[in-house]
Image (cartoon, rainbow, N blue to C red; front, side, top):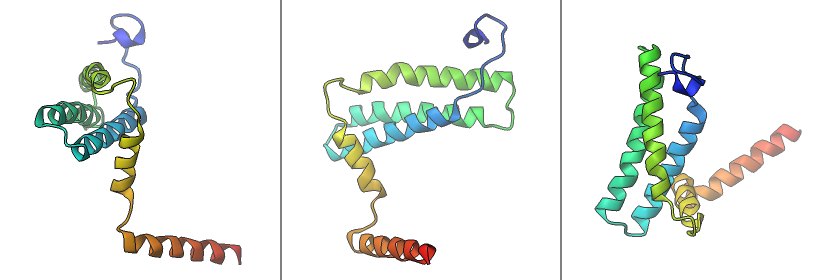
Length: 129
């Protein structure tokens, strides 16, 4: 504990909730893209394990037992996930399938997309008046 603070015994730095959530979102999109591409159970399992580690880190850091011990355990989870996440990415591969998979998960069904756009346009017009 405390090694992230510069020297042994130093307090842990604040837990980076937002970057960890961002990375968890990327890992979820990677899982969706791999699943759509027909990845095998082993590959999907590796991605899922990284996501689970990140989720556990968020849970630990945000737990009611938020003492120094929980903070250190959360950091260890994040560090373990960071070691694994690099192995999930091919530096020469395009990010397009990952981004597209994430967009498809967010997009409303085809018929509802027009309603959403039309509703947003009507709201914008009402604000201008």
